[in-house]
Length: 396
Image 1 (cartoon, rainbow, N blue to C red):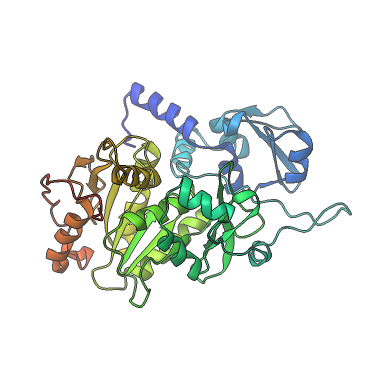
Image 2: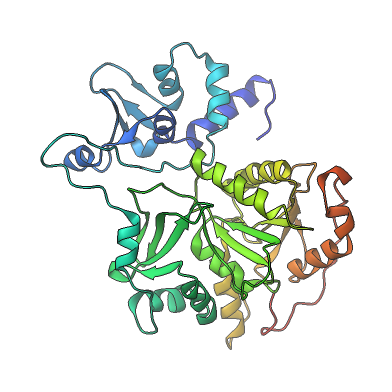
């Protein structure tokens, strides 16, 4: 997001920030935590947050709030100033810019008194109770039939202990911090999408599609675990690659963990980051954020997104599977690549051929000496020409 001084641009920015930042994120940053019991007693549309004796209710899908003990209410701008009356509009804008793209963790407030209080759910205990999905189970059918994920990709995730089956056909994908500690689970199913609470919150889901015998020199970051599995299925260059998911919006702790992972990967020669995000405004925001992280870590980074606006990598995978079936061929789902090299932000996406990743990696291999460190400067963007589409059996 570019920030300029014209009144029209300022108003446009205010409107964008008002729509992009959830009031719950502001409260969690200020130390508030969700009071799940009180929220359940009132309404799922009104989330009650506590910080010691302070209480704020978030409503209107995160766009509004009110103080049940006072007369405060309004939008996210008024919330920041309500929490800190000394901040002017400029201060508020700077604070909200840093929160764009974050989703609330909805971490539950710990209660210290009250006989009716139940124990917090331990994600490790929940995880250990579950088994991996097997052929014919509800979660396996959901992932292979509805999501069209290949069995070999699921088998790799299961062998690495990052995929289990939950109730009602849900698939659980473990999130861990850089030390390997389980912090929670992405949960996806035919009728459910969520993240576990009670642990450390979102960090990273991750797995290797190869044997994992070599160091990680290539980090692929996606927005969801199913996207990470889908991208791995589409990816011809699995060797030395760690496929990760942030689970959507990230907390400050999640961002710090990702920076540590990037720094660890950057220790390997010719390491790079692939930002495999959706083709939408949220994807653009992630690119800006992750490119900055990569610059700090000394990683070459590049963006790849589906051709169709709004698409994610699982839709791309499904389109490829449909193309392999008899009948009319769908439109080519792959054609976007914009570079986010070490000394500049991502450029506007440009159309490339269906061999996008082959050509990007070939370019990278030819310029390994240039790409080996940020001190050498950013190499020029590759010139990629359109080539004939691969056969249905070929990996993109």
